Length: 169
Image 1 (tube, rainbow, N blue to C red):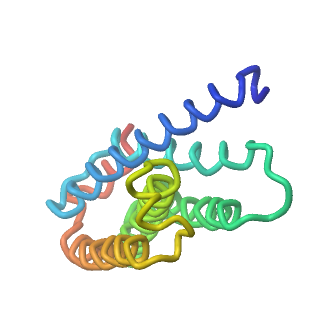
Image 2: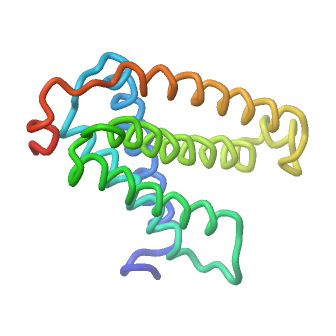
C-alpha cells in the first residue's frame, strides 16, 4: 500500500500523471517553437513532471537503480526550470536555460516511456528483450536527436512577449 492505494492502483496513478506530463510537455514545446507563453500548461507540465519523478521514489525498490538516478536528476533539472520561469522570469540567459531544462525533463519522461514500452509491450519486448538491442537503441537515439534539434530551435525562437506575464497563473 502506498498512500492507501494498492501497488497496482498507485502504478496506474503514476502512469496517468506521467502521461499528462508528457502530453502537456509536448504542447508546451510546441508553444516554445511558436514563441507562445502558456503559463497554465507550463505549470501543469512542471507540476506533473515533478510528481512523476517524486512518485517514482515511492515504489518498493531495494537499492539504487537507474530509474532512481533519472528521477533525482530530473528533479534537479526541474528546480532549474522553475527558477528560470518563476523567479528569473526568463530574463537574459534564463530564457534559454528554461528551454533546455524543460526539454531535458520532457526528454527524460519520453525516454522512460520508450523504455517501459519495450518492457511491457510484447511485440516491442520481443525486438529488444534486454533493452540493449538495436531497435531499442535506435529508437532512443532518434528520440534524443529529435529533442536536441527541437531544443535548439526552441531556444532560438522562444522569446516571451511580456516577461511580466511569465509568472501569471
